[in-house]
Image (cartoon, rainbow, N blue to C red; front, side):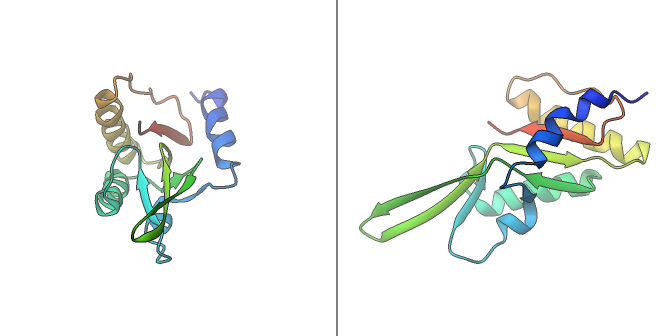
Length: 128
């Protein structure tokens, strides 16, 4: 059974002008420090995205990315961050289960309930 409404939020977040594949975004070599949620380490963030792919994700999309600058004695440093990931789910039931299990662990640390599998194409993952 598929609940079409389950992907309504994903549709909105995918339409955001900053929506981009998370690994490619984190790895851009342009001097901007990019992070996810409350994590300060771009390396840890990249490892986190890789966990989703290892669990079975088809794609991991970062969206609603916010840019900011910090000026100090070293000059102006540029940062980007998001607390919003969309995970494109596989059709294979075993791989889907792996993605939903990872999601349950991640959202439990934030105090949220896991999202049930209702046949949706995307899974929203808040990071902060």
